[in-house]
Every structure is written in structure tokens, then in C-alpha cells.
Amino acid sequence: MRTQDDALPASVSPVSAAEFSSRISAFSPSKNIAVAFSGGPDSLALLILAARWARRRKGITLHAFTVDHGLRKEAAAEARYAGSLAQVLGVPHRILRWKGEKPASGIQAAAREARYRLLLEACRKAGVGDLLVAHHLEDQAETFLLRLARGSGVDGLAAMKPVRLLSEGEPHVRLLRPLLDLPRERLHATVARSGLVPVSDPSNEDERFDRVKARKIAEHLAPLGLDAARLARMAGHMARAREALEGAVADLLAAHATLSPYGHMEMDADAFTGARAEIGLRALATAIRIAGGADYAPRLNALEAVHAALLAGELGGGRTLAGVKIAAKGGRILFTREVAGARKAASLLLAPGEEGVWDGRFHIRLLKAPKRARLEVRALGQEGLAFLHARKVRLPAVPSAILQVLPGLWRDAECVVVPHFETDIKGIAWDMTLRRSLPPRA
Image (cartoon, rainbow, N blue to C red):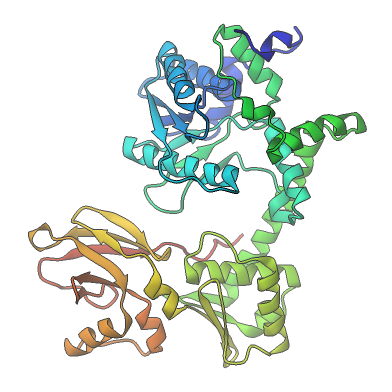
């Protein structure tokens, strides 16, 4: 059965090998690459182009990963069919299944989160450095409309980036969008020329989903001059504005903030209150993310309330936001991880050779342990401090609350190592770094 590609006008040209090569080469790609492959026309076009490109270059390994969300009864068969398409193109294929209970609401957002989590895990397992996705010009425009409808500011309305990290944790995997400036019809023309038949997902026409609604609205906006290309350009303008704002924030923090190896931050209060409101809000959000280990900034209304209190000198004994305590004293603003939040953070079990991120703040790798024991990473707390005092470990002159939220390595109920202060524990070796740093100066 053929698809809508049959209706493409003859004037629509497929994406050429040279076009794709120039786009992906601009990323300086790794030698081990994967394609996020649903089997639909967009991702099939990407796999066709990537397979052709990889065949012409020595040392390139290409994978295709298909996520089966299990949300429709046809999904498993579609994933298998995607595997047959990958086989025709000579690309090793793997199906990734989203298991467990599915949420009753917000299913698209949950599916997206699960999809990228599964793709990241598969990439790391296969040693993949770059994951290609088939986002194109219309995706850029539809995302702009969706975020506009939600009242997003500059960051939300900014264009999707051609390249970004899938996760801040290591090993790093980049997400690459080599087709971002190309219209959907050219991708479909690429598929039509190949003779392959893509998967047809009926949910792509289901107007219960916001993205489908955005696509329909975009069709009505085009006669007004607001076509996909114009909307994408607007998103590009917002991206430049975001870049300028991020640069100003980075300069402010580089000049007036410090990040302790213990994970807390300090900022000069006068420099903060003297900054323009948008820069101050962004600096505040950045400090909270760094000190608290969160992946996202706090909600804007909560952020504005703390910002207003700081400007008015009404912070009192301090406030807590997103698991971070914010206090002003002696001309400085101090950002520290909340003790209760760190104690509730999921513990991390490590055997020698394993690594992970604890509390979103510290990346820890256990190099060796006696009898290859598994050690638990969790907050030091009062119990850990007692162990350090008993061992007569010299501690820095910082508040106890800062020490309590540092990671300790525990075996059963005993704190056996505190990486920040102990460097010579017989039979145990580790490596630990802060997950985040201050943004580089513009």
C-alpha cells in the first residue's frame, strides 16, 4: 500500500546524498551513530540517507533503534516492520520496549520522556556517540505554535537546536538534527524514490493530540504568510535572543559567583540586585539548578517571588525553592542543597567499575572495593558526620548543613568513605566530580 507520498508534486526533489553529507559532516559526527527509527516516513527518509552516507565512509557503524511504546495493539507489529525496513537498508536494528504502567493523562509527554530514556540507554550500551532524529522544518514550526499557546517566554519559543546533549551525565550522547531546515515533503519524496513503504501511524491524524492540532492550525496560517518557514525563522530569532541572554547571565556569574567543590554556590548580592530583571531571574534559576541538581528551572511564578524578596531585602531567614535553600548574609547570597531533600534522594548502589549520578549533583565512579563489595551512595547526614568525628577527620569551616548533604559511601549502616575528605581508605578507590559547573563566560 502506498502512502501520501503518491500525491507529491513532481517539482518536489528528494534530499540528495551531497546535501545530507554536508549537513551531517558539519556536526563532526562520531564513528558510532544511531538513528531513532519509528519506521514512519520522516525517520525512514533519515535512515535511507544515513545508510547511504555510512556505506561510503570507512569505520562508520550505524544502528537503528525503534521504541515500542505499547500504546496501540498495532505497535509491536509496526516495530517489527520497521526492523524489516532497516534490514533492507543493511542497518542493524533493535526494538526498545516501554514497560510498566502507563499514565492515565499526559500520555504524549510521558511517552516522549520514556522514548528518550530508552534511546539514551541503548546508545550508551552500544557505545553510540551520536543519535540522529528526523525533526524537520514543520516540526520546528509546530513546536513554536504549541509553546506559543502555552504562554512560553523566549526560551520556550526558541528554535530546537541542531545539536544538544541527550543527558548531562556521562558518557555523553549527542542528539543531532541534520534535517531541521528541510520541509517534510522533501523527506517524503526521498522515501518515494526509494520504493520503500513506511509505517503509517493513525495517531498522527488524531486531533485529540496537541501536535496534530498545531499541524492543522499551521495549514490555515500559511495563507496569511505564517507558513512553516516563517514560523521557523521566528523561532530562530528567539534562539538568538536566548543566546544573548544566556551570555549575559554567564558573564554575571563568572564575575560575581563562586561554586564550591562541596556543591553550594555564592553570589555577590549587589551585583545580583543591580542586574536587569530578566538577567537576575535567569541567574537565580541557574544557581538553583546547579546547587540543587535539578534538570529544569523552577516554575516562573515561584522564581519571581524569591527574586522579588531578594530585591526587597525580605528573604528573612531564607527560603527554599526546588530543594535549594537561598539565604542572604553579609552581602552574599548563598545557595545550598536542602538537607531534607538530599536525605530523600534515591541512593546509588555501585560495584567496582560502575558509575552514576547521585542527587543530580555528583558524578561518582567506584574504581575498587574490598572483595568487590557493592557500596551505597547516600547523604552524609548527622550519622556520617559522627563517623568522621570519630575518625578525627579534619573538616572545613562550613555550616553543618552543607556537610550533611555531601555524598558518603556506605556499607550497611556504616559510612566507610566520604570522598570529599578521605583520600586514603585501604582497598577502596573512587573518582568524583560535580555534575555541573558555572556556565562558560560568553
